[in-house]
Image 1: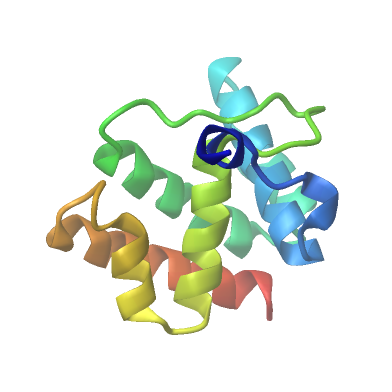
Image 2: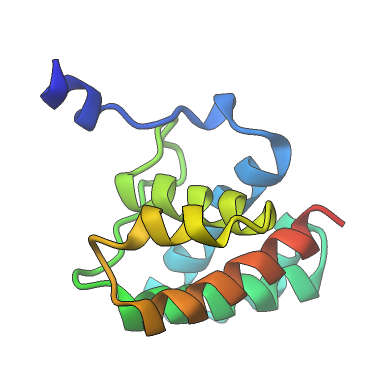
Length: 132
């Protein structure tokens, strides 16, 4: 039962619209980056603003520098989130509520405090832009 619950990740359709847009933008950013193309404009169109794309870029840079393993994103057509995508969505959700203790609990086993601080700031700003 525990292994089954750990293997399950949220379905894209179950997310709130800003969260689903975040995942779509994240996947697009990663895919275009792998193709050697600048994703800023395409992700800005997907998220509804260049500012949101810029803040997503900052969060992804922070994640890339902090994560102990490479960030894993699902394919653009995949209906389920990867574990890393689900964690990123939850980071933005918790930071958007201003729940710093919850954010620390979410990442305490993965990252040290000084790294969580930078991620919290980036995630909270991104949430504010996405939900403006």
